[in-house]
Length: 311
Image (cartoon, rainbow, N blue to C red):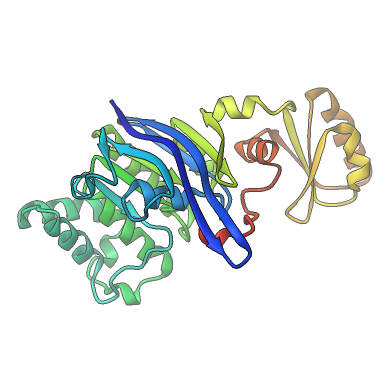
């Protein structure tokens, strides 16, 4: 059975400037027990899709099912089988991380003993034990986000929506979250993950989709998407080259105050030699998911979609 099936799903908003198509006839399937990534720039349609799939927003047209249940027709049954980390969600400031987890589990029907045991496990796994009795209002933004993620992952719900779950976390905390997410999937949950961190998508997901302007442009594995890039190697120059000089070697785009060129292995030696002659710093590496996204979409994932507040 598919965990999620969307058919011709659309969501339109009317604004003073006209109609915004946040989703435009999106078809999507996610297999049961899968860790699925949903990538797109701010405003591309990811959050709108999650809100509709979790029953928080009505679509303009189309259908969506979770575990064979129509989300619109069976909202209560669907809510009992899901949990969600919303993008930029906020904790209850007077509650501690332990209280967030235990109270949320009790609301969902867990016994006091079970809630405490699960809280112990998640606080340890997420590195929250030193802060377990600290009110959320006194925690940093990263620790508040970790608390929200721990609270939702503790449910072990059949379907978990994780919308930018590691936003604002340091690299070590992000990897702690990755391990708990992997463990949750091994225990049988299905996860839909949105993220701006493409290394996160590459590390975690079994399959992913790329959405742009409300349209799904790609669905498949990260490796298959990277294979679509015609170049094999990326070189980043801190300065000293113009885009016109590099264009004969491949695809060029600005990055981190310098220029990056995606080229073939046969051109690497020539480019690095010229860089050394000019005493220009150069970093060489394989093509990443970031370059694959840029090639597919034509823009960086960090660049917002116009009208992004809707999606």
